Length: 96
Image 1 (spheres, helix red, strand yellow):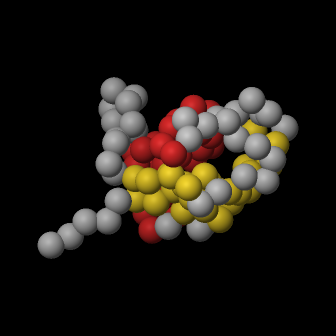
Image 2 (cartoon, rainbow, N blue to C red; image 1 turned 45 degrees about the vertical axis):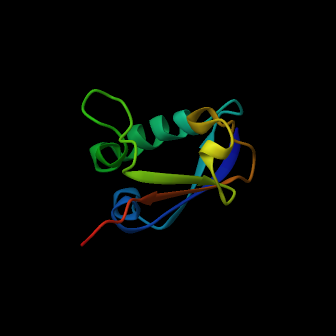
């Protein structure tokens, strides 16, 4: 098992019960696996922020940083997670 930190803000933080949580995952976990774990653990409150009804991600509705860098600078949702990693999930901000 590896331990990672998940940080979030606004509505996603509310869904996770706090702005910073510690998560234990299998050593082969990636961002997709993390999101599956968070959906199982926190249910619809988290799931609806990340996934559409058909199970695909809501592209453009959130950003994910792995150790301070956008996950798409790496392998996107396939980024392998390592012990001590810091994942930041931010909802998109819009307005007029």
